[in-house]
Length: 119
Image (cartoon, rainbow, N blue to C red):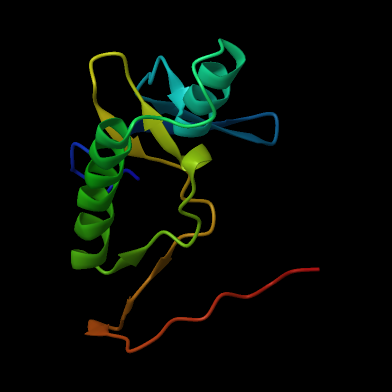
């Protein structure tokens, strides 16, 4: 996250360890995740879905962020509504890079990348 400079990728300003816990200082996205927005809308009686224009905007912004990651040799691996964050100013950012990976090794772009499952 600290290496990403794109308006659709959540910025990590700094990180530190405190008592065996990793803390990340990131931008505030005051509306939370797209999942939270959808859940809240349903709870308020606004219907089971969101209007098409809103969905198209959110997905377009998220795809801009993912395109940036892919162009820089990164892969997210966990794209879902809970990892797309929304701010009241209309900005959308992709977050949660816990299982992300690189598609570049030793300076060469890989044809594929593997994900290891830990049980």
